[in-house]
Amino acid sequence: MKQVTKKFLEQVWGLQGRGTAFISGKGEDGDWHEHPLSWPRETDDIVLPPKTADIYFCPNLFTGRFRRIGEVKGGCWLYADLDEVHPRKIPIKPTIAWESSSKRYQALWRLDKRVRPEVLNNLNKRLTYLIGADKGGWDLTQVLRVPGTYNHKYDDPVLVKVLWWNGPTHKPGAIRKLVKDVSPGDGEVKVEDLVVPDLTAAQIFSKHRKSINRRTRRLLLTKKVVEGERSDRLWEIENLLLAAGIKPEEVFVLIKHSAWNKYRGRADETYRIWVEIQKAARIQASLEVAETDAPQTIHQLAPTGWEHHDLFMQSELPPPPWMVNGIWSDRSHGIIAGEPKGYKSLLSLDLGISVASGTKFLGHYDTNITGPVLMIQEENAPWFMQSRIRKIEKAKGILGEAQADATTLTIKHGGDVHLELLNQSGFDLTDPSHLEALERKVQVVRPVLIILDPLYLMLGDADENSTRDMRPILQWLLHLKVRYSTGILIVHHYAKQGAVPRYGGQRVRGSSAFHGWVESGLYVEKPDPENPHYVRVGREHRGHSPQGTFELEVFEGEPNNDDDYEVMIHDPRDKQRDALWKYVEKHPGVGIPTVSKRLGKSRTQVARMAEKAGLEIRQGKRKRGRSGRPPRTLHIPSSL
Image (cartoon, rainbow, N blue to C red; front, side, top):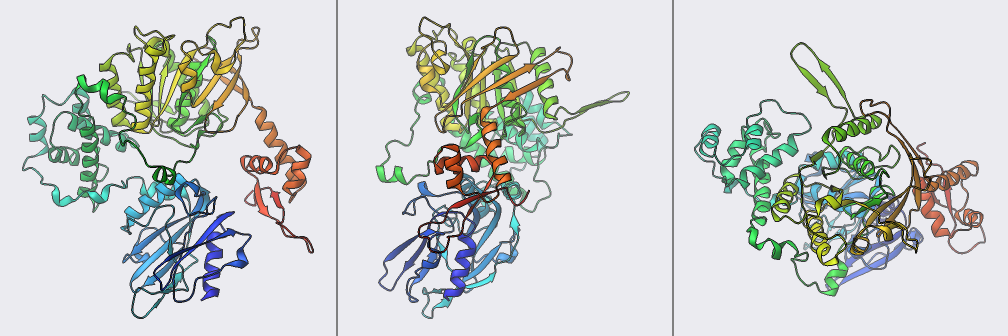
């Protein structure tokens, strides 16, 4: 038993890095016991509970000595308590599978890289719902039975037997693609509740024709759809029809017979459509707020009320990851501010296109989180925006091509850009009807980022220097962020320098409330009056360590020339990472203590630098006669 168990745990935890591992057991006395051990330092010190105990393990490692959600590290294993679902009959073959008792199973799926806790949590949950596993067995602190031990829930204890442990390794992107249409709330919807009306789609359309607006009619009557837009448009139509007062059962008929039905022909077509409609109906119901009640509802940022200390501290609240590396935190709210003609709008537009398409910001900074982006801009003419978008997309390689014949113009796009713009519409953050319209758009599109450019043209009669005027606007934007899990980016201007110099967020024009509100900030300055193409960009992030400044040179050229556009980046942090990489290339296997002394930085700082540079950190071997923990060593990744 010990040999099987030890080999199994070493295979699972050995790929998780360093941290606290947990073996748990429930003995004859019925009490639950936790056995934390420092991994991998205590590899040889695994102490199993007695054979008479039910023994469990948690696949994840932790930063502290308690098995709490807030202390979970990232990992490379997905897992599920399959119950009676046989692991050979599910669409994604597990890497390791075992039988926990007669005809009951558990499994692990190995990812080819470690992912953040929030990503692990999301994939685990969706995978569980996809394969029909136990819906209580996906959380980050979940424990599973250890192969090689015994299950004592029966009169005759049952051996927990390994079925296989040499299954495939999976890419996170492939898993994400497979489970993207799975909603964790799917299990709450029953198809039996659906009573399909005895009406054709044409009859239902005719019945509600006056209630259906022009855009919804156009979408419903579309015969040819753009591939890659089915999911977004299907969700939009469902919400628009429900918002028009049409019953969910009638919406089901219209959706099923529309060209946007992406589930057509699937065995679970009815179930999938009904699940989506029910989800949209719940969201629509949550927005049924009379306009007179909006001010009271709109600022209620904590609808769940008070939270007890213990429950709050057990909640999973990790710092936000990067949406764009070193530039913008995921779902954060903040400002791009700077001097006039400092490329603030260009930076915000490039950022929006990068997030909407998954391409690099300014061709340099990796985008980690992509999704729909909404941009409201009041400053630039539509023709100028189109020209600038063409230049940016051409530089990113996603502009696409146009082909024409005698009667038809066909545009083949080079990539999906989930960006929607509202150009020079007179949008006003002090007008309740404008706020309601934007909120409904957010509810339908569910963007990951909203860009407002520039703020001063959207304030109506409000005074930007008045905290009293600005507070409700900033609170409402926080309402959007919290309720719909979206980021907010405001483009604003600097004030003139006074007698006492100010820098970065201190220079933002208007109330000091702006700077205090910021989670992510980019501050643009023009240090060289003789070079209009050159700007320096400072960075501020509440959830990350200081990133310093980077320099930017932009050559936009003529509006009608997409090729006459160039961006040059100089980021001092790149040089630091490059220097470490080159040093490791010359000295493979160099110890972190050695690098620490050479650079004059702590070992923790060197480890973080190595991680950001993409270097591989290995556990060194302890020299004979030496005590203590062996040093960690740095290597160029073995895959290169």
